[in-house]
Image 1 (cartoon, one colour):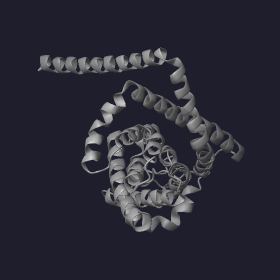
Image 2 (spheres, helix red, strand yellow; image 1 turned 180 degrees about the vertical axis):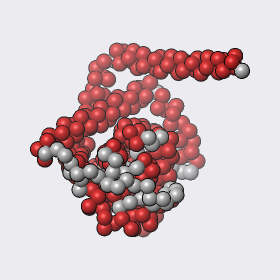
Image 3 (spheres, one colour; image 1 turned 30 degrees about the vertical axis):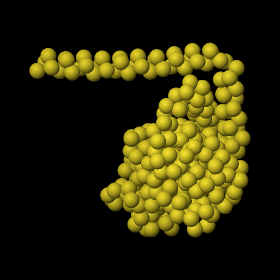
Image 4 (tube, one colour; image 1 turned 180 degrees about the horizontal axis):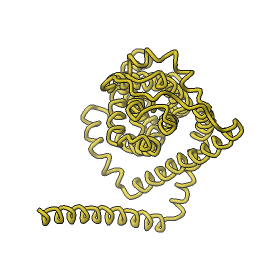
Length: 337
């Protein structure tokens, strides 16, 4: 018995060492690639920072401050009382979820995940409710979808509205489908703030600056990784299964954009929008809902504080994305194509 236990431990640690070695090799390979063409990859970093500064920061930073203030002053539960019964009936959570959903739908990624984490750490909601809210309260916002994706990339506000409507409707559907058991395990409510209002404002601004810089770092590093994958040809390898699938169902020339979008949404949608047809719109809606690895990691930076596992969150985003594709296709057929 003792020998078997020791052997099992030995195998476990050997496996961990192997994983560390693989990760280390990948990191060293990336460092060598950066050194091989510093001018190119320096520009990639600058492009990522520019994308963050022009497309994400203006819409994200004010909402990050304002939603944090509302949470800090204990106003959330009072604002949510009116919707307590319908929210409990639909999603099996308290009315606080309606506030989180509304703020996420207005502000976009990763505000919903951050509010959930703030409410959990302040003991306003339980882990049970935090997990349920993560399914339908982590969405993109209208500034990004309608303004950037629709008006700028597709050149159509109508397409932006359709993508946003399908994204939000599918989020609600996802929350209903994955509601699980309906016991209300919500905490008694937020404790009244003990800090003075000027201290709350100061701490909120400091916290928001830190968090918005984290978001910017994720966007920049994934923009750089996307360029590395493109330059090395690895993106073509990764997108080949999608190419076979899309060609078979008569959706050509979309595999690269889709593969990029699974890594970082903005870049993937920009590539897909070069073809303004029903499939590129629906795939863009799919990518916005699945959110891409960059946003998933941003969200998990907060949701991990609530003991929510990454595999559960990724599964819920996959369900959300499939529903969005179907709803978007129906809306496109009705109003555009």
